[in-house]
Image (cartoon, rainbow, N blue to C red; front, side, top):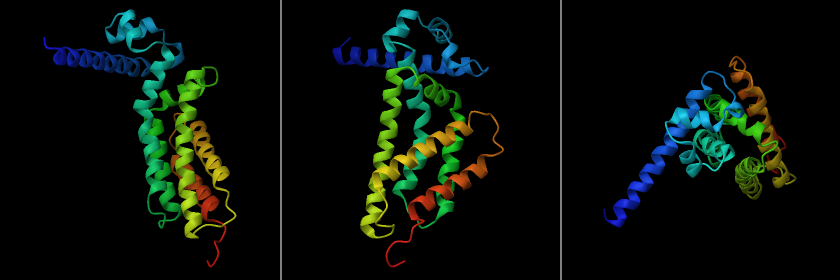
Length: 210
């Protein structure tokens, strides 16, 4: 087999094993088993791979959890990123729509994101991963706030770095705590309330000339 084809075959095999492992974890937690209680041997057996093969792709369960979070949590962040980069003329309703999408995506991947929150309390790799993701989102928020200040659409007294960090952690913690319960009854109200809080934080103080 030519070197290029052999390299491609190895890559495809690696990707296939990774897909099987990720799919196996999804199946195993579908019955309510917490991720932290799943032993590697059980995951490997459910994926149809040897334990040694599992470790070739994921050095430990922390790396596996990070891969799962990357796979399942991106759309939640994308919903917020879309709003921060978009047109804010829709007012609080536009923020509420973005928050509603974030809540829906969180619920779709609830067990993964709750596991990240739990494991990050004691695992430095997971902590560093999730902190880096939140830091990227905070930087994006700060950039938009700086743009708004330069455009004169928000109060010149708004502190961009502090406000960006506050908004990031407010949204992350609020949605995380809300979605610990598997009850969607309050999702719509939370989206409206959180959307209004974000809007007032950014645009509540009159800018010069408004």
